[in-house]
Length: 179
Ligand code: IMP
Ligand code: MG
Image 1: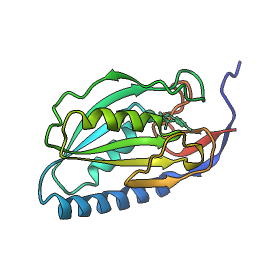
Image 2: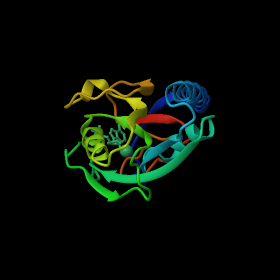
Image 3: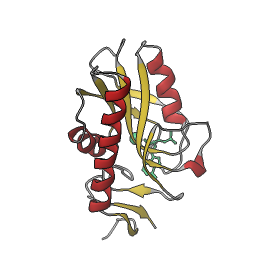
Image 4: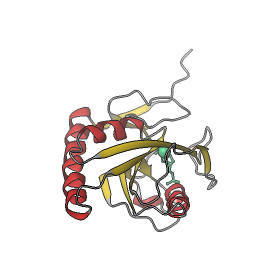
C-alpha cells in the first residue's frame, strides 16, 4: 500500500539552496559586523522546520554567533493555518540586551512570526531581525516582512529541507511541493 502524497517537481535543488545560504551568511555577517561592532548575534531557530536551514546558515556566519531553539506550532496535520500559536519549547537562555536573529523556514500567513516577535520584544532584547528561507507573500493575513529572505515562492504547499507535511519529508535535501 502506498500512502504517500504525490510530490511535484523539484523547485529548489541542493546546489541552489547551498549557494543562497552562503550568500545570506555573507550578507548577515557583513550587516552585523557593521551595525553591532563585534557583539554576539543569537540565532533563534524555530523548530522544527528551520532546523536544517539554521544549521547550514550558522556555519556560514563569520561573526560571533550563538544558537538557541524555540518550538512553536500553528499547524496540526493540515495544510491550513489555524491562527493559534503555541510555544511548545522555550529558549534556554535569556535574550535580554542581546541581538536576536529569528530563523524561520517559511513565512506564510505571517501569524506565527507576528506573535513570536511581539512576545520576544517583551523580553527586552537589543534588536530583533528575521531571516526566512522561504516567503509566500501571497498568503499574508498580517503585515510581515523579513529582513533576509532566501527565496520568494509561489502559493504551494512546500516540503523538504526541514519543511514537513504531517512530519514527513523533512529529510529531502531539496525543496519540492505537494501536487
Ligand atoms: P504562518 O504562521 O502562516 O506564517 O506559518 C508559518 C509556519 O507554518 C511555518 O513556520 C511552517 O512551519 C508552516 N508552514 C507554512 N507554510 C508551509 C508550507 O508550505 N509547507 C510546510 N510548512 C508550512
Ligand atoms: Mg516553522
